[in-house]
Image (cartoon, rainbow, N blue to C red; front, top):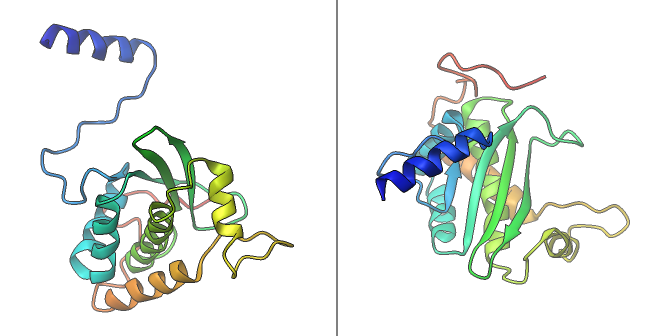
Length: 187
């Protein structure tokens, strides 16, 4: 068994497959939400400790069939600070990804993560969403999103972002998103 694991690890290394570092044995955010960057893990930790709304979003996702990856990117087409998109689905699991542009202070970034987690909950509550087309249909079907100029957002996500921001009011709001010696991801 150990030999097979070593062979698999070597094979993946030789094929150029970038294996993520193993996560710690106890993951406070659960196995359904996977942060790919130390900053996103910090934002999730802060949201979890400081915001009941944020904790409720994570609990809902933990009870769902979604596996959610959160990643920091340099930019998003259209200038948005965050987005969720559908990756793939199996008969039992749906995979989605959140991309964030690290701009603003920690409080703003945690609120943005909350906004995007609300979108993930909307997908979790819509079992018919199994690909990018059905994801688009979900948002086009919302009354706040127009058919003449498609807009993929929700009132619930904007309200969640504001609620999380309010719950974090006591947190050190001026701390930049790239604090602790980490680099700024803005252009």
